[in-house]
Amino acid sequence: MNIVEEYKSALRNYLHNGGEESLRRAYELGRKAIAEDLGSIDMIITHQQALQELLRAARTADDSAQLTEAASTFLAEMFSPFEMTFLGFRDALNTIQQSEERYRTMIESAQDVIYTLSTDGIIKSLNPVFEKVTGWKPSDWIGKSFTSLVHPEDLPFALSMFERVVGGETPPVFEIRLRSKSGEYLVGEFTTSPESYNGKAIGVFGIARDITERKRVQDQLRALAKRVVEAQEEERRRLARELHDDLCQWLSGLKLSLGLLEEPSKYKSIQNKLRQLKQQVNTRIIEVRRMSINLRPSALDDFGLNIALERLCEDYEKIHEIKITFNANDLTAERYSSEVEIAIYRIVQEALWNIIKHAKASKAGVRLFQINKTIVLEVRDNGIGIDHKKAKSQKSQDGGLGLISMKERSEVLGGKFQVESSPGKGTKIRTELPVESSRS
Image (cartoon, rainbow, N blue to C red):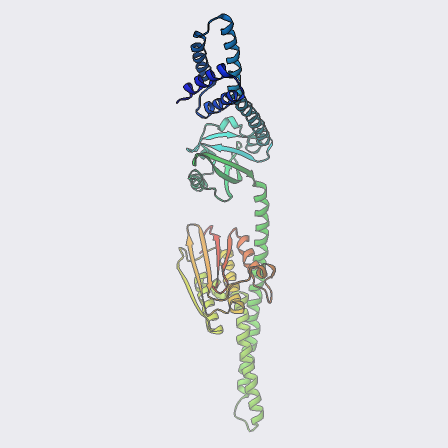
């Protein structure tokens, strides 16, 4: 039996017999009508049809009036679920409207640029702070592609991020340069996520923060740190030259003089003493030369990063009896800027010393390669791994792991530094440095 026939039957039963049970039936029919997506007009028509059939059987006008009044009571009870549903929808609508007002107020008063994009990259909305940051009115760009705002060099990266979000991903925070109305480029820090409906991305929601000033300060600090490092390296170079040219030559002369005194003599005790002094001087010459190389490797200045690192690995392998492989076959340039070369050399130097002192490794590997405008260094070992809590608290001093020093050297040049380590499975250190230009 469909709901129309059920309603007619229930109405007849109420008009003939009355009672609360029949009114409860009217209420249940109202709920059923809502569940079957029947509207109030549908139920009024059904009520009129049923009432007309009953009125035809009425004998007098008084009977008709009584039937009509009783039917109104039945109809009102049937409409109770409709009324409650309407009130619920009204409350929900009010809540949504209030939420929208709060959301709109939050967006309009936000200090960051809040925007939405369509899946084809068209700007759908921009909050008022966009004008404060860029000088452009939101209306200047709503309905246009976002790509015209992006710095040409950043556009490929920006498009790749956009495609990831449209594909359903929420990428990590990233930076892109945007064109302001004055023609200058601002640095924006972006957080983006997909707008979805039924599991499908229908747009992009994003928040952009102007970090131009922050980047300017960072660049100034980085430039200052570079000058400090350059001054340190220049001092190292001076000390290395003095050790090699002055002290080492003096020791070599002393060794030669001792050799001349060590001629066959009847004083065997003196001869033995001279031989011992000669051996001690020879040991000191080797140590001074090693100190000179550690202060400033001449191979780095004379032959470049590749050969200097190859010799460094060979020295560590020979002195400390550990197998060290070196691979720089994928480098695309023979020479790099002096700050890049010395930073990589010092990081390798520190990393190898850590391996010798802490890792208890039997073998290690140093790999150097280039990806586009980034030079990548990886140093691996098969040692005991790193206790990260201990490593973070230690400095690059005796007993320290030097991770902070390596990280700082990378960041000074705008690079990235990562450490991967598992107990008993060794450690991998990876440094990525931007390469502006090579040098001759």
